[in-house]
Image 1 (spheres, rainbow, N blue to C red):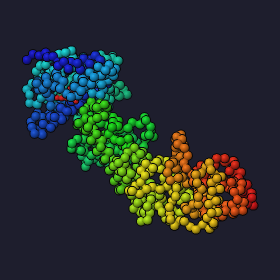
Image 2: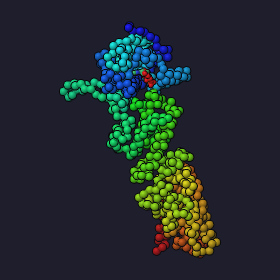
Image 3: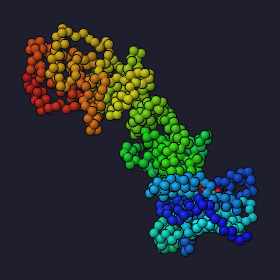
Image 4: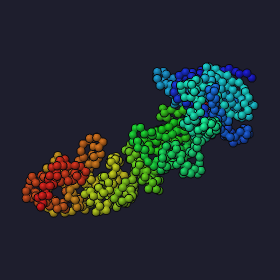
Length: 633
Ligand SMILES: Nc1ncnc2c1ncn2[C@@H]1O[C@H](COP(=O)(O)OP(=O)(O)OP(=O)(O)O)[C@@H](O)[C@H]1O
């Protein structure tokens, strides 16, 4: 049979013309496309051999071979997959039936109509399988034989509108594709030198490292004496850990894989590996690192998972798969439903991707929840690194998602020096008559435990959550309540601890007048001056109003250069304290005197100091204290 010349379909020719004449980016993907086809073809023959054992014809070492002929500038890829019959070659290679190519053409036409300069960059997003060979080759020759066929088929084209096809002898099953490389892609050319074996090796590692069959090539190593030895190298890792059964994988395997693929020096804190066979089919291998990268909060952080389609790399940093607050999760998803040429635009509204994304989120949150329940130490490690992101997530979500995140919160509290508590645990410990969740904001344990405002709660043995992280109060503000129980800052408003209302040893009217006069002196600083129900041994304290900004929020916002105004300040005076008796004495004997004015200022400055604010005029403050000390002699 002589070679028959056939014409390409018009659509196919359009693609070929583009490959040959217009596309100048991403040419290297041709190799990924050809390897993926070879790997698919091996999948097919392997699968078919399960029911028809004789189709393997004794050739069952599945391999993909690459080779370069440096002299003649020819690149070859060979597989022992399913091959193609004559009719299949005509059908598969001469026409454009594949969805990827059709989408590509359609998008291309739309963009060309819109005179979009980026029209040609589409190739990077779509690739178009076999045809991408024409980006790097002047002539493509494909020789193939299907199992049990007597003859093989040779297909050849220079991409100029026609191809030839003829029967040939081919003893071995499978497909060989030879690319006569364009000059640009040879050692003398300007572009990537495809005759260079190291370049090939690099491309395989970049795009096809986890293809399940060995990709082999002859390589030549030169030793120090200049002696060259030939060796056959397997270029890919072939360790798609995620498709192996969990029971066959050791912890060490996961650790090594994670460190190598996601370039971390430390083992992962947690590994989540699962296979889903349902409406959507996918395997996923996710890792929670031990340490947050330093740029995790910055824009240049490469967030997102890797996508593979049947072990072929599709895309890196796909951020659509997990919500922003889980940006610390590294890993990959492999689904046969992803096409190799999945573009970021297509991803936007890919239904399957949405289902996968929902599942992954659930999976990660569920794992964190069980870590919290089963291994608190480990969870604390996680929390120290990534707790802030979960808190941020609470501020960004609502409804059920927010409820799930709230269950992940842990705080230090007055209950234990070393253990942190969840909100649920706090609520469980609450005495029956306690109807709010108390919290206090501050620097650290030592500071908050010494706060005057904590005295009464300490005395009553009421548990207080410690908020040392600046965002904590914002999170609680956002939540308002947990399990229908409100949060109550120890540093805000009234504490409403009924029996704290001890008798005040003074005439009510006189006390009221005294407080009014002090308030008059501090008119521009505080909204109220009142007797404290929370102080036990300290003389004064400042608290914020029940609503609006708190003083700690004010500090945070100020640090962020966001001036949202001042928190409302209320000066509380301890009626049991000697200082209060002294104030009363001054007021009774001197009335609203200058001394009372001076004392009022001092009280305010003292209370501010405890809150971590510097007195408005530190020099004047220190002068007055010195004066008082001298008088005390
Ligand atoms: N090495 C091969 N062995 C057997 N069949 C092949 C081989 N390469 C290509 N084919 C056949 O040719 C068809 C067209 O291949 P092509 O790479 O153009 O598109 P595809 O792989 O089907 O789709 P896409 O690349 O868009 O995912 C394949 O579906 C397959 O049937």
